Image (cartoon, rainbow, N blue to C red):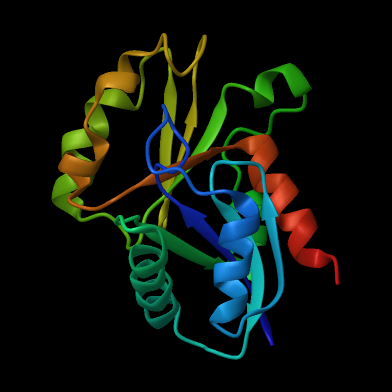
Length: 181
């Protein structure tokens, strides 16, 4: 069994695409996944499966969400080992808990193209710090997400793919949950 973490994009935000976590957990269980746990209302699911293909899992979960809840939701999957690497690859090495509130990881379904990265280079060295490592974009906001010039950058459009972000505390909590039996 492999431990996976599913990150759902854009649910329970601003009264849109509402999914109760108990209902989401039950839906995952109907797919035959084991040891299903959810974390906070933003669509984080830790589960176990024998399926080895992240893309297959993504498709199955997205189709089931549409079938059960009636709307489309992008899902990004990482194995527990991949999420542990997200933490290990940390480009910022911060230690103050207050800083963690301004520190986000955006998860991408695939590595960005060289063309997309070139378009985003202009945002790397401002007051907000941004680094791409593999399929993750690490961002440390100078003040806060909502007060950042990056808040208005259409990353999905520039990258040509759906992106979902989690703060550093959530990333660490999901890894902790994934390690628990």
